[in-house]
Image (cartoon, rainbow, N blue to C red; front, side, top):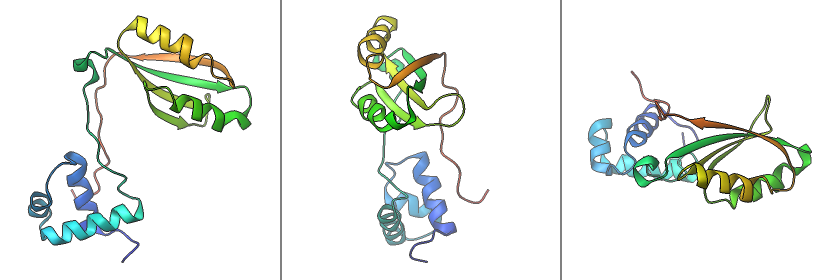
Length: 154
């Protein structure tokens, strides 16, 4: 039981994935358990690495960041993967990096304030990374959904 998750853990995860800032008392009420149980189970899931922290979900466009762009990156050599990932991680506007199968070696999500910012970022910070052979860009017109998997019983 110590290293396995059960239905109570899944319910707690589902509730916290809707609002990571919800206090343990409110989580406990919704889950039908005590606040102490929520605290103990949450600590266990943190120690297991299941819960990695809590983040805010931001609407970047309301903060002046009007563009979300996905980049499909082709590497010159597969052995350069770590070096390219490390370099991409240094670019503040890069918010997600995935090692992927299929057409691209790496798939990246970035935010930019506008097309001029994106062009500068693309030309001066990304294209110059040693190990990148080619890039395909995809501009997001709208994010229609952003959610976590529902782990509790329906």
